[in-house]
Image (cartoon, rainbow, N blue to C red):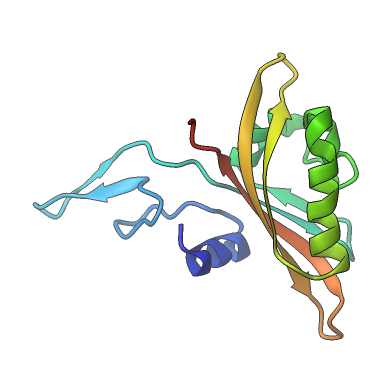
Length: 148
């Protein structure tokens, strides 16, 4: 998904476009003008508001991280609980880049699901800056990593 489309999707609170111009392959156009749904990359969006402690996750983030939507989204300080121990330092570096230095953060992380399954997820985080230049929120897009 191109960066501008990803940012627009994150601002809207979803990371999937469902029109015929979808960047993520979720809906494909046909020569006859109709559309045909097919599976494409799954992208989830999440946002943590640092001023209000509000956390919003798309349904795909719950699925990618193996969390129960009935329990609500994880706060940033609980997010490492879902990762393999070896990937927690990388997440801390990503959070420091975004929240302290105001930079974009990228990484590939191993997620540990409650049932013991492990999946690999690619993450791209973007700080949201307030009028005074301080970080007020973190937006993140997540998707399954391509199997090698």
